[in-house]
Length: 116
Image 1 (tube, one colour):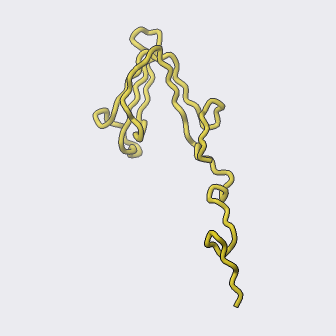
Image 2 (cartoon, rainbow, N blue to C red; image 1 turned 30 degrees about the vertical axis):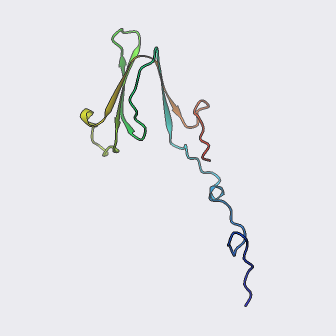
Image 3 (tube, rainbow, N blue to C red; image 1 turned 60 degrees about the vertical axis):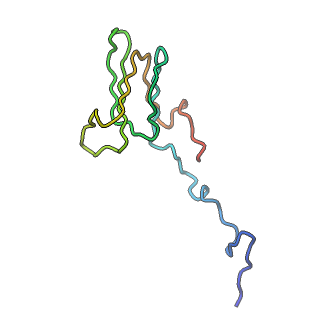
C-alpha cells in the first residue's frame, strides 16, 4: 500500500495554507465604529478599556456655545430592551466639547486594523 511521504512540518497532505488565507474577504473591522470627541482642553478620564459603551448623550453645554457629552460604560453587555442604570457603570462627562463624530469602519479617517 502506498503512503504519501511525510514532510518536515509533519503533514502528510503537503503544505497547508495559513488560516488567515482561508477566507480572503474577512474584515475584522466590519460593523465597527469609532467615536471621536474633540474637547477644548485636556479632560482626565478613567480607564474603561474592555468595557462596553452603553449610553451616549450629547447636550448643550452650560455656556450655551459648546456641547456636553456623557458616556456610560458597563462591565457586562446590556440585556436587550433594558435601560442602563447609572449606578452600575463608569460615567464620563466631557464638557466643553468642540466636536463629536461617529466614523464607520469604511470611512477614510477610520484607523484600519492590521489583523487582516
